[in-house]
Image (cartoon, rainbow, N blue to C red; front, side, top):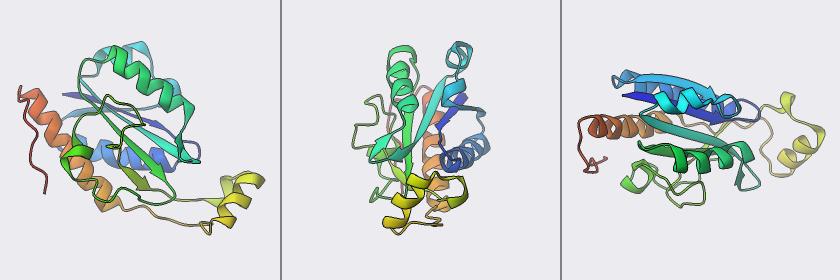
Length: 174
């Protein structure tokens, strides 16, 4: 299947996580295209048979470009859509359970959106962002668990394969 992996990233951490996800889905035998949320065009959505959308989380909220795109995907994309988010730390207890690996058309407000840890690069932050990150004790933190992200992407790739084969069942995830 043709899978479009879209990321809304302010400083690049979510984009990096999206690249890991895209690589793992591609290794599962699917054609994968990556796009920044701001650059997604009509042709991208028409060609995509499945979509993965990820957003950075700031103040417990996804970026507005991702929220708008999630709404658009729910209206325009007929294939499966998966959502993920990247924050200061991984907060999803078990992102490999079926609720977090099933396609999601409920937007970022759904409890089934896994939140993975990201990396904080102080050099790219504004003064206000550095102050906030410093107050949270997250300065220079790298909370990425790329093995966990890869395992989630593998679970998504299995779901994409099932969809391509016409199966409607949820594959077991271990």
